[in-house]
Image (cartoon, rainbow, N blue to C red; front, side):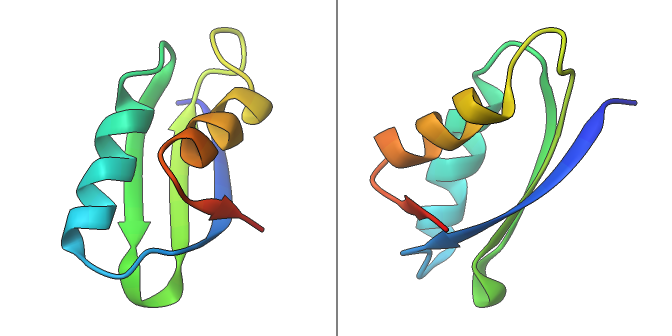
Length: 69
């Protein structure tokens, strides 16, 4: 099991947004699980900090067009 972070994200409005974020994060080396809670604007990420960083995760979310709080 890796590290778990819960990230507040603005701009998640629908399941399409959730799929975009989930797929984008799962493409990162070291990310093993992503759960997007659409109605709460939360992204729960499980990752290996030896393979990717929290900053890289946040940067990926931003690159997909969403604002990380």
